[in-house]
Length: 222
Image 1 (spheres, one colour):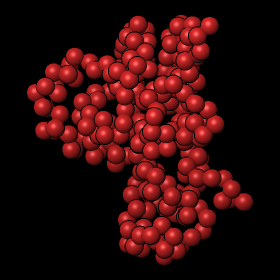
Image 2 (cartoon, rainbow, N blue to C red):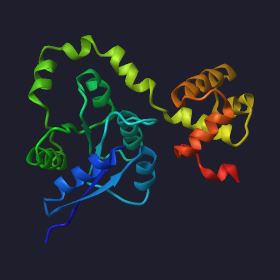
Image 3 (spheres, one colour):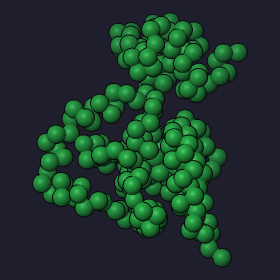
């Protein structure tokens, strides 16, 4: 009997996650674990291993792009497929640089989805013809910057998360700067960006929101 193929699906829409799980598991060799947030996924891979991971691109707080970067940094051999209903061509270069193994549209058939997963297992990539034609015309590089920056601008990165952790423990900006080896001005700039991303106006609100989103360890509140 063949070993089961373990798949991790990260999508903040439960109905999409369950529907995709049911579709994939029609293949008797595949089993899917559905996770609703990037932070849960990063915790889960510390204790479990997966053959292929499917990440939604447009997730709140930590995007599929940022999650891919962190996953590849911690587990360089990971096979990550971006699974999205959005146009990925504006973000193509950033996604490739992050280490993804391919792209799957949420509109694909079950056969196409299973084929993309099996291709990833063979270290092969499935690229939609429409995207392939755009790459041939080099259109991607000509109009990438604004939309790529927009994707990164709404996602909490690892350094911002470290700053949040220090704020939660009660550290002043000067102390955070010393511990994270950055200037106090850089800490202040990052805090402004964090407030914007979380939709808050104070350090206290930021801590409450970060705790709600599981961005910081609860032990800091004891």
